[in-house]
Amino acid sequence: MTEKEKLCVIEWVKNGFNGTKAYMTVFKKCRKESSAAAAFSRMMNKKDVIEFKEQWLNDIESTEIASANELLMYLTRVVRGQEKDAFGLDASLRDRNDAVEKLLKVKGLYSQKLEVSGQQLVQIVDDIDDS
Image 1: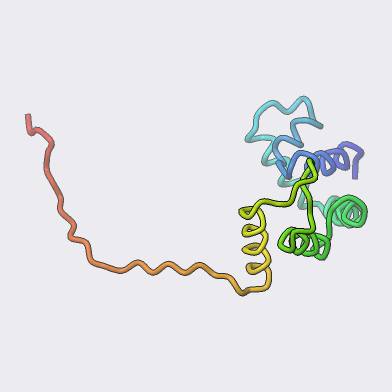
Image 2: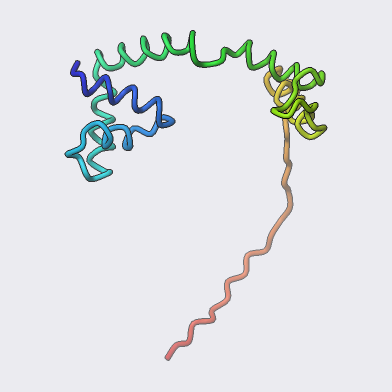
């Protein structure tokens, strides 16, 4: 595995998982997006790159990325009114309701079902002039 491949994986995570952009940032000679996308895809299928990506993501997850438990605890604090905003104010009712909805989704207690039924008559209109 090359140093540029490592940098490309790191750039991919930093830029929000845009492989084409990551590849073009690291491999500056690549100027076509289609070529960069294809090359990035090939690179990410290499065994050593896959191993590096998984190891690197595991390393940063423990230090930089909030765990699922941390996120659930945060949402719970918002729901209970224990979380303050940047100005020291309580979360708004809307924010608290959004947090409740997210927690319900995680717990599998919230589902939105839409049922659409009915019949529609299809009508074809020939409005093209024959001349």
